[in-house]
Structure formats: structure tokens, C-alpha cells
Image 1 (tube, rainbow, N blue to C red):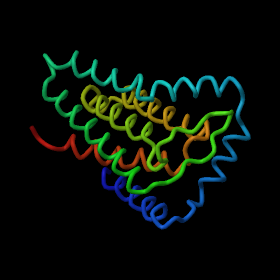
Image 2 (cartoon, rainbow, N blue to C red; image 1 turned 30 degrees about the vertical axis):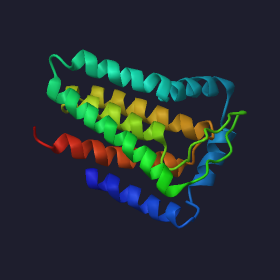
Image 3 (tube, one colour; image 1 turned 120 degrees about the vertical axis):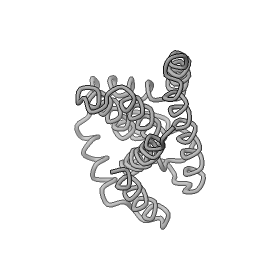
Image 4 (cartoon, rainbow, N blue to C red; image 1 turned 120 degrees about the horizontal axis):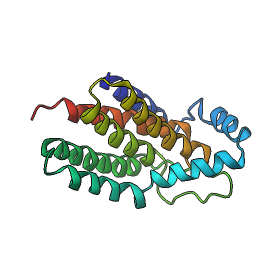
Length: 186
């Protein structure tokens, strides 16, 4: 299943790397924007904030610090997953130089590049890793993790600061990376 993530990312990377438009980006952006309402905007701004670096990175540090004593192996894996996510995000954004779309609702687009979405990448890595540690195959925990991943990523599309393909790329490379780290035996 992790290889599917790499395949999806590779397909999107080829399109974006060639400067081609991704066929589903504008139709999805238009559809989402047409159905926007102030209540959704407020909720999704909150999910973007939760997935942003001012909240996200302190939470990662707190989780690792709290889990270190009793779950050292898992916390080392989480640190590796998150450090790799940081390298992937920065490296890929610099490699692709994709300019962000114009944001909706008066949102100022961040100054970084667009591809892949860092919010989507980090959310996938953190919540998939945490679910792997505690859930086993319990659907409720995986569902909650999936909901957080989906809402943080979707918030970036809804607010207009990413193309849908940026978010899908973040999710797919994040899934591949996280699952790759999780399968390594320690």
C-alpha cells in the first residue's frame, strides 16, 4: 500500500515538473469555492492553524517528550518520520518551485512554494505514525487520524492557498515515507 503513495506522488511530480496543469485542480478549486460559507471558513481556518508550524511543531515535541520514557522506540520512529517530513517538504518545494494559487477569502498566500503541501505532508506523517503506534487495526483511531489528515489538507484547498494536487502530493509522499519508516524493525 505504501508503494501506491509513491506512485501517486511520482505521477503528480512528473506533471508539475513538466509545468503541466493537473486536470482536476481548477474544477475542484471552483467547486469548493462555490460551496463556501462563513461557518465552514471559520472551521477550516482553525484546522489550517492546527496544522501550521506554530502549533504543529510544539505538539510534536511535546508528544515525543511525554512518550520518551515509556515508548522510546516509538518516539525515535516518530522523530525520524517528522525529521524526514521536514527534509521532504523543504527539498521538494525547492526542487519544483511551483507558485501558489491566489488564496480565497482575502487570505494571503504563504511565501513558500506550493508543491507539495507541507500541512498535508506533516499531518499525514504525524497522525498516521501515531495511529500506527496505538491503534493496531482499531478502526476508530484510524478514522480519527484520517479525519484530522483530511480536514487539515482540505482546509488548504478550501482557503485557496494550495492546489488539490499539492495536497494529494503531500498526503501521498507522507504516506509512503511514514509507512517506510514504520516497517523498519528496531
